[in-house]
Image 1 (cartoon, rainbow, N blue to C red):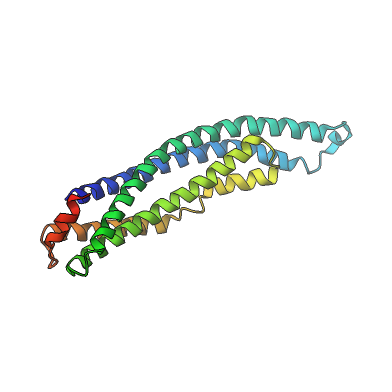
Image 2: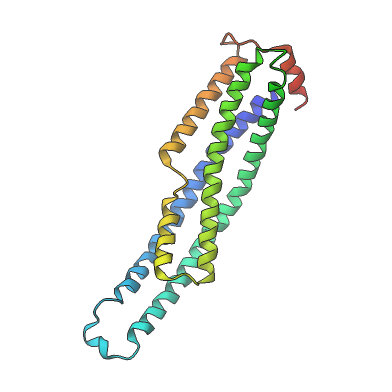
Length: 219
């Protein structure tokens, strides 16, 4: 089954995508942590300066130097990460195209369920697989949009310190990627794949009708 091979490639591709994403994110967080001390220093400028209070513009001058230092380090660090994430999203598009082709195939099978009711369980398995894959891909797509928005705003250098601090927290926390939810989706995906393999291996009572072969040849 060509479609089963495509699904196997898709499943492997998702694992590789998630692993690569996690690696880039870990490196991103390390880069962010390296500049958070500067943000703390900027915040402390609002506190007492003791005898230094008598020096003209010392608070403003120090703040300016720290902010320049912050952006000089932060923007290039995030730029490296964004470039890696952007490159990885090309693989994302490949995964989405493969998922779309399987969905189209499943819809074609669904159109024959009336004449071949045996297809219903098979289509159901494909639906479950497609739903899990789409949920996973949507999770990462949403997070990428957050990251690119944060980077572009920081690149412009117009965000104040409170916004920068919040941005870095959101960038690190990845609110659109919930580890337990992702783990469950990947687990469900494996279970659905195993069911599908069993069907084609003849280990279940589900029969593959002749119409399946006809539809499969068109894809």
